[in-house]
Length: 394
Image 1: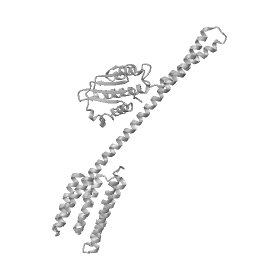
Image 2 (image 1 turned 90 degrees about the vertical axis):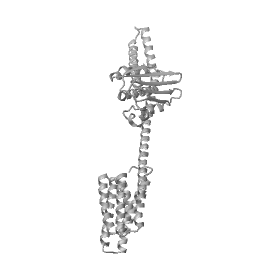
Image 3 (image 1 turned 45 degrees about the vertical axis):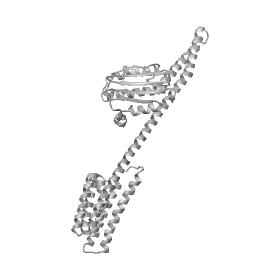
Image 4 (image 1 turned 135 degrees about the vertical axis):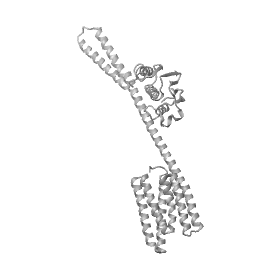
C-alpha cells in the first residue's frame, strides 16, 4: 500500500485481524487439549494446517505488496474448506468466521463478499441447529455477520477515500512541479531579456559609436598616414557589432524580433497555423513597449490556445486579439469550433493532451497576476480571455 496519512490505521486494522485469527485458532486448540475427545488429535492437526495456510497467505501478500485476485481467491477457498472441516470436528471453530468475514469482503469485493458471508452464516446456523445449538449460538453468528458487513463496508469506504486523497495529493504535487517549471522558465526568459537589453544599450551602442567615429575620421582625411589602421579598426568594430547583435537575437525569443509580439503572431498565422488548415486573424499592436518576459508569456498562451483549437475544436477560423487600454491588457482567442464543457476542462480531458493545455495556460496567467476566462458550450465555439493589469505584473 502506498504510504498516506491513513496508512497507520490500515496497518492497525490488519494487525488486529491477524491477531484475532491466531488467538481464535489457539483457543480452539486449547479446548481440544483441555477437553480431549476422539477427534482432538485431528482437530489439532487441522488447526495447525489452518494456521500454516493463513500465515502463507499473509507472507505472500507482504512479499508481493498485494495478494493478486486469482491467488487470493484460491487461498481464501482453501482456508474456508479447512475451516469447515475444523468446524465439523469442533463447534468452537465457529468463532473463526468473524475474521473470515473481513477476508471475504476484502478479497471478493462487496457483492461476492456479502454473498459469501450470508452463505457462511446460514451454514453455521444449520450446523449449529443440527448439533443442538442454543438460540444464542445461532443469533450470535447472524449478529457477527451484520457487524462484519458494516465494518467491512466502512473499511472499504475509508480505503476509497484514502486513494482519492492520495490521488489529489499527487495531482497537487504535479501542479506544483509544473508551476515551478513555469516560474523557472519565466525567470530564465526575463534574465535573457535583461541581458539582451543591457548588451544592446551598452556594448552594441558603444561599438556603433566607435564605428561611426572611425568612419568619420577615415572620411575626413582619406590620404593621411596610417589610414589603413583606421579602416581595420572600423571593420573590426563593424564585425564585433554584428556579433553583438547576433548575441542579442539569440538571447531574445526567436519568435520575438524587431516586430514584437504582434509581428510574431502574424507570422504564425500566415505560416505554421495556416499550414495546419486554420485561418487565423491577428489584431494586435507590436507590443514592443512590453517587457520581453511578458511578450513571451502572451505568445506562449496564444500558441497553447491555438494548439488546442487545431487539435480539438475542428475549427476553420480563429481570431487573436490583443488590446491595451491604459494599464489593462486583454488577450482574446475566439474560434468557431465544436466547443466543449468548461466544467470538465481542468479534469484531465484537455489539460493533459499536450504541453500547452489549459492547465498550463491557467498557471501562466496566475503567475502574471491575471485572470483567465473560458466561455464555451458544445457546438458553440470557444472564447479564451486573458486579462492582465500591467501595473501589477511581476
